[in-house]
Length: 118
Image (cartoon, rainbow, N blue to C red; front, side, top):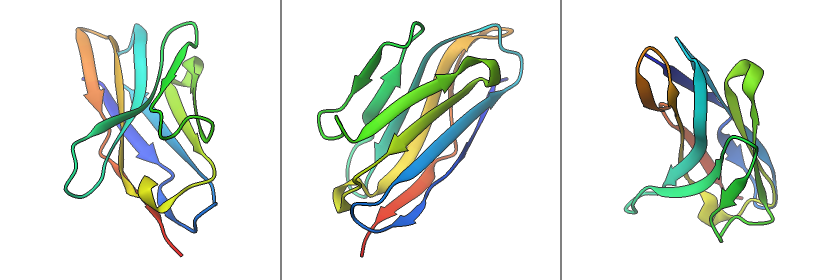
């Protein structure tokens, strides 16, 4: 069983920055897609950013140019650097990692709160 542990959320003023981290542990032979999702109160969970093997990336239009996703394969870790944060970025952020361990896995982090407010 592959488990994910997130860190890095918190309260930040508009225009500020935060960096989220998500580390996977367990039996992992290979990792495919690594992504970040978010869910604001009363809204559906949405994809924020994803990174594929070879480091190709996808971003939601609302975060393009402000957020950067990256991965460190040696540590089975994915990061989300968030700059120029806006109040509408306030949400619980979840990481998602898919790959092959003792069996194929599709694991989610526990969620970390990001609040952008003055």
